[in-house]
Image 1 (cartoon, one colour):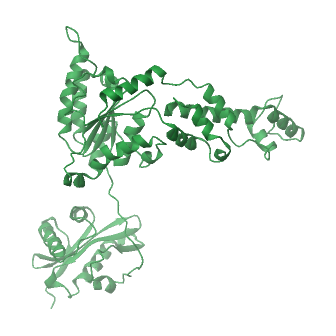
Image 2: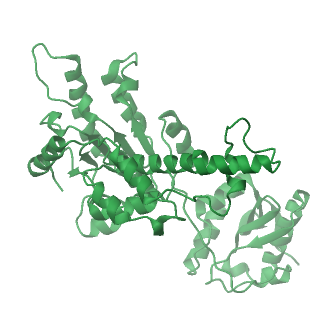
Image 3: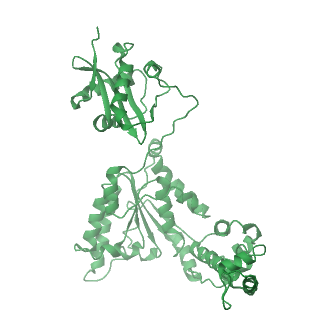
Length: 459
């Protein structure tokens, strides 16, 4: 005589589910899905229980994804095993999900699970040579609303790898910032306090914003950029809007908060009576200590003019590091050129000459020169005298896509000179573009930056 029965899950069965979970983990089996996921599926997806009287002695939980169903939990109390309960639970779940028209019902089980009779009895096949891969999504659904309100976003994971050259800076940021934040438990074992706020300083165009985004990408934390110029028009004033913004940021579990051109709101306080900007600086000085009390976040302030910052702003206790981001050295410039030159022509371009000619160029300057050279090469390939001749020949041959009245169509050139057409910029194209590029950083600014490193850097 059967002393148990199968029925649908009821909310009152939660205690029984917890009891099943405890019994399963006590036997040394760690379920694939977390307890929170299982309980969520009990409420929102498909769940059946085996009961003896009113006591839950077994349960099966499943969810559907498109045309495939997944068994996310199957457990029976030890004293009730080998009675066919598991097979009955699986059959019940399958019946409940039948109206969905599923093509497959699958289950992921930990490799420590040896009791698989219920699955085989129900017709499941043990598929060999499969591996289970899992990834935690860094931003949870509940955070998407507040993040959108702040104008924040989750950046692509490859930004860090795509920062060309600048290896010294990358290594410094990786070790000082990323490592203790990404490996917080390990850092704690060594007595390392993860950084909460840093300043990046250096001449314009050296990549401070790029590095801030790359840090967020490397950590897989949301990136929130705060624009003081936008907050200035707020009805509460800039100081009030700044305070409210950081209060909203506190709702996020993790965040890299970026304040660019911070000298605009944290400049030297002077004058009598105090200027309105001094109130903003005072507010920011209050915000940073409160921000530092929250784990899982990093404030990155960037400035082109570190000498303009208020002395109280940079002191110990507010910022863990004050890191210089300077002009790229020869190795970094070479890596940048290798990235910007099209792969089809990179072997024919004298990269060493380009590196030599771009000493004193910022990353932004090099990118501008590279794009300018590509544009020049494209125009030469299409509008050069050779291209005009090719278009005329094509026109004489009856090519309707060729030039009319001496005008050259790009398609006509490509079709008419396919064998001899240029395929990309040459060394000369790059040298011409370099010669006409006005560098962002003057010799005076570069020299001042070196002095700032000596006096103000803290790494």
